[in-house]
Length: 592
Image (cartoon, rainbow, N blue to C red; front, side, top):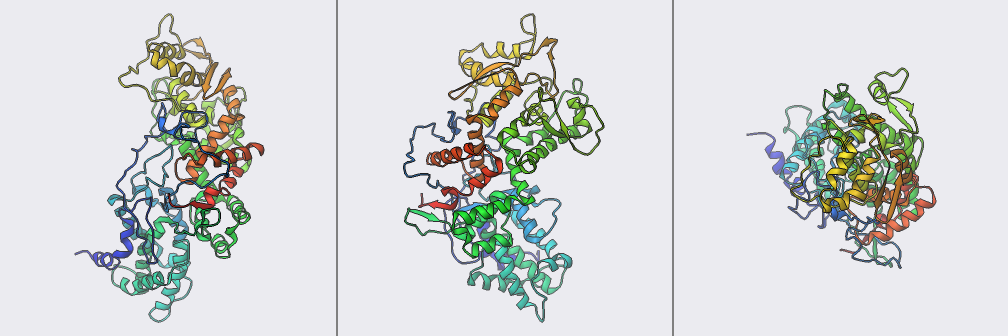
């Protein structure tokens, strides 16, 4: 019989909350594990949000923050109010990786979540609190990860960095001190007396359970295994329930500290943030803002910003990118990796180095290239394996949407795709997703001929055949896609398509906005300065930052944020600070 079995039986009450836990509802107690309501709702399938053609459940109006399409009017007379949010929010896989690395002070390779099943995407993001359930497979993954991590953390050199004391005698006194201090960091709050007693009691049960380590190391290892599988570690638990005079529930300091750190760092609070929570400094908007700005000044703030833009821009598509080797012999996996790296570096440059705004993200004629990407761009000069900053022709390139990571992934293997590119712009950039195409349509474009010379000709001829299709394609999907026709299937600039001059001009409808443009640079420049573009960017950050899709009541919050950010130029770091100061962030609604 495996010697690991007794330790799970001994601590079953601690481990059980991680198995079958749902993200919504539930309550809690002062025991070592939170009792969490189970749910079997798996949510949308992986990749169901963000597909070409859009998802009509997200909206489809120019004010996309109301998933009902405006059918449920909301009064803002009393100002913005907190929207619905589960009391138990499971850490995303990215947050789990960052948290265990910070908690255990380890450099982890491979990352623990590399073995986890991916979470489903909802409204474009994989951190929807309602859908992040823990089923049997993930429960087992958490157990295996806890075993591995606890083993690595209790190797002599690693354990020395975690211990607050030197063990003496049987080590139980030092173990109890470890439980208090490590537990405060792991659960993002002080332990209750019951938890302190329970976890301290595990110390003596750990001896002999492992083939290596001293009895003291084995006892600490058992404690770490248990804490890493507790619902209080795997979830952000919000149990505050006192209603104030405004009929909302103020979040406790430690709950706000976790909301702050996971929004702005994607990881656990540091000691300064926990101390601020303990001192009551997060009870005011001024205190929250001070901590938000401190967190954003740290390099750790780059992780969630990168994760948001990875999902918003669908960068993961680069990983499976394929191109026709006869037409594009220069394409390989290294070039695909460089495309992704370019966009990530560009985003970091705009947000943190330039402290730029939304317009800069869409229009800055600068990027970061290595030798392979420089050749794709046609840049002259000496470029090597390392990425270096490079200025681009502002007549041909502007921001994220003229980078190959977008252009190549929203194209076919042998030709560009105005339909894929146009649908992406409407859905992801303007929050006006077209309805999905009808079933049974023929996806094949008509062949080239006397009257059909360019890709644009093919798409126009194909989408005008059916009046139902023409209704969406003519004014909504095709025109913003045609704007990118100067870029081939790999993202290289071209003046000719099949020997004919490229026509990248058009007029597109987005909600009530009629957008006329000459090419992609002109189009993205207008979007970057538009209320439609900025509000959509804010709405996507709302979804990602709060871990849920928008509800009708959120219209008032988004209206207020939009007005505030528009007045200050839509600086991206200021957007993140503003997200932490809303009533929806600092308070809970009375039980939905």
